[in-house]
Amino acid sequence: MGKIQVKPEVCIGCHLCEIWCQVAHSKSKNIIKTFLYEKTIPMSRVVVEENLPLTFPMQCRHCQEPDCVSACISGALIKDSASGKVIHDPSKCVGCFSCVMACPYGNIFVNEKTREIVKCDLCEGLDEPYCVSHCPNEALVYVSDD
Amino acid sequence: MRKYDYLIIGNSAAAVGCIEGIRSVDKKSTIAVISEEKHHVYSRALIPYYLEGKIDRDKMNYRPAGFYEQARVSLFINEKVNGIKYEENKVCLSSGEFIEYGKLLLATGGKPIIPPIKGLDKNNVFTFLSMDDVLKIEKALSSAKNAVVLGGGVIGLMAAEVLHKKGLNVHVLELADRVLAPVVDEHVSCIIEKAFNEQGASIHTSNTIQEIHGKENVESITLQDGTSIPCDLLIVGVGVSPRVELAEGTGMEVNRGIVVNKKMQTTVPGVFACGDCASIYDFILGENRPLPLWPNAYAGGRVAAFNMAGIEKEYTWGTSMNSMHFFDLNIINAGLNISYSNSEYEIIHTEDENKKTYRKFVLDKNGVLVGLILAGPIARAGIFLNLMRKNVDVRPFKEELLCENFGYASIPEELRWTLLKDDVILGVV
Image 1 (cartoon, chains in turn brown, blue):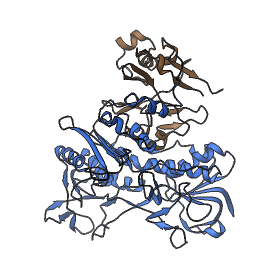
Image 2: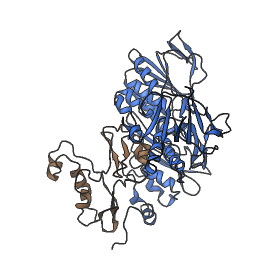
Image 3: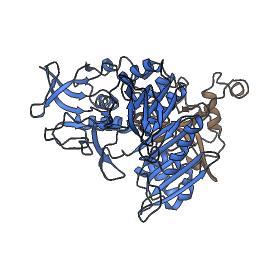
Image 4: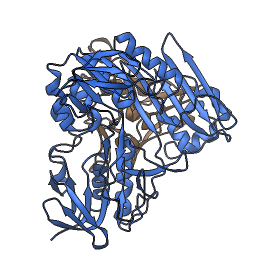
């Protein structure tokens, strides 16, 4: 497994990574359908930090020794030894937010209304992370381990 | 005699942290777990969620059904350890069987504290720690109407909320003058007490049980202030004390908990300890103390595992930390709980009473963040814990800490990119 890295100097703050992250986690995977017709629009797993003119996106780092996994009381967060991914199983999550307390990057995001959390899954099941492939200025890159 | 390279006594977060740690670096060696309880590894922290009906029994499992087999762990379940011959590397089970070990981890957890009050041995008095407690409480719930919860700490309040949601009349008794006094300040105690009172659950502070009435069952309780309340379900949720009986009288250092160094080694060679039974290094205090909290148990077990496997690693990022919620009010605290600025500490805070939001930070003389409390919005709280762990002087941007949308963009450039050095690529333009 590799990881997504960011080039803050070329991020133009367009927030398209957030939009395409939502599309990637929608039912239809279609940008129009996601925002116009789907019952619930998924939350983005990547967030663009802003302190203008500075902008840069952040998402789960899939840490080698993840603090969120240590903190998780339900076993919903695990470090998959085969893929190296930090995986979140929403069906096991109780919304205690211990992971939010633990993540050093602040990259586990909270849906206050539903008391659910979301995090980057590196676009599981898709060919490539959408935030990377759809960044118009190549500010996000996927760096492979090998 | 059976022999294992790694033997773990206990079967909760600390044990799982150790098993997963060992297996991440050593696929071959033999591991055994001795568990006093008869259940598959479950999460004690989920007890309130289960009782409330949010999750079923299966979801109480902390790891999936095939966990031990997959990790190739031999499981001694429903087995008690009678004693340990540390000089011979042997554990004696209550069945009389001896088990030999290469390295040993004591992850025996904590036991509920039962205050010296007459009548706490009656049938309808329960602790709130184990699966067996849960099953008994579940049974009692069907007929109970009036619950009393002894203890206004995290356990007591979570129990109280569930019982209230189950339709019982609930009274919480707290000996201190406010709830959660060890972990939050007066202001947040007050918000929490208000939340409970608004919902109709009574909180009695500076008060406790004077007398318990009833024959085999508790029927009513007289409080120290003379109030009498009906009670047919009494939960004792005062806290836990480290289980150190396997260390006592052996020469192993015990100071409230089993004393370990940063590598989680006890004072007996080859023996490690972690989780609720241990006294571990608190990086904020710079000294050891029991830190019976889930993240410390798992991470401590994992660090112990590496050292047991011969890879040196220190657990230097543990401290007091809680993520709690009461009636949808989220609260996160970490590090020191200090109420007012003094010569040692500077306090900065912001609050909005209407929105029930509160943010408070404790800075030491060097401007390093040593404590925090967030109530209401808790997004990205881990960044603060990271600043604490990295010993960062936050004074140049301390006002920013109080903003709800605080993030890495709020941190001065040089420090920001140092903290994110593995995650960003700079110098491309």
